[in-house]
Length: 235
Image (cartoon, rainbow, N blue to C red):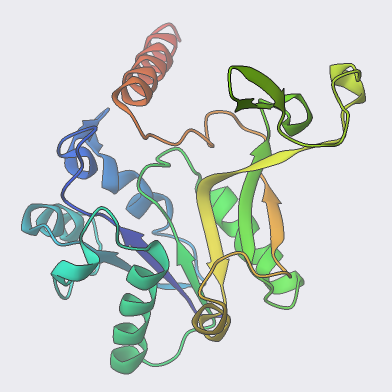
């Protein structure tokens, strides 16, 4: 099986300036995803799509393939992720031949492990190459969520789940952003990573499923790394 990894890394982060090449622990954020996918045998290349020369330079240093800078129309804050993926996929297959799957690894999930990547690819193979998307148990159950209606609140879902105890709620999951794998032709046709036949890769580890979106997330992750280092020094 031949899997192409795509790591999207736009340069214009407003919430955390320079996020993708900002050091997290002892290496830039983007390096975490590049290194975790380096030794997976099914992966043929790790292509980085960026509009920023500095990100390109750092990504190449850590083994990423960066043959071009992303076109300006795909480097805006409103550009769709699927369009970025299709642009990269078209270039790669014209240059290197067809692949069996496109694996999107967002750099904002730095603690996703090699073992999880391998598990996702194995699930893709076992499910006859149905799309695989990583999910994690929902922290806020949808049956206990509300929406605003004027000056009051009403249940977000019409199903009455407010009377249920937490242990009686049916399992609910949220997409965690760590792993998206799909057949290229299905991505071209569906224009989404979530067609009807999508299979879940359930990730239970809270550390692995951290998605760095805000400065608070970044500070939280730095605190976690510092704690891990302190614990290591005790042994």
